[in-house]
Amino acid sequence: MSAPNLFLVYVTDIERATHFYSDLFGIEPVTRTPRYVPFEVAPGVLFALWNGRSETITPDAPRFFEVGLMLPGSAASVDNLYAEWAAKGVTVVEEPHDEVFGRTFVIADPDGNLIRVSPID
Image (cartoon, rainbow, N blue to C red):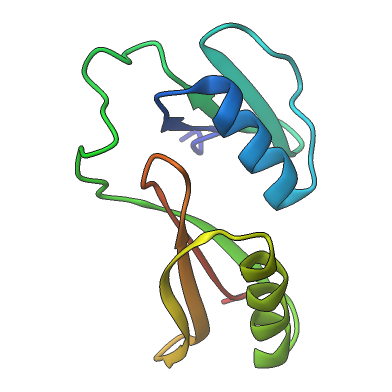
């Protein structure tokens, strides 16, 4: 069976979202189109922004998923990244705290999509 290799995040403003994610993750898109912007996050795996359904995707639409970033290292690495991102003025949903899987925090992108940082499983 094939593993998923494309992860889409619905956004309302493709330029704003592209800038947000490029700055947040320190990566550049593979290409840019007016409604679709993919980032290669591993060989053959894309994380992409999509606003091709912008008439049905609004900032107040509930978000039922999280983009995850798992960090190597100790709880301090999670806290350090939180401090770095907080200094950028991101929207904090959950401040750093301990969960059953380790230290974690959650922020939101400009459309309310959630981004969780945690240690590597």
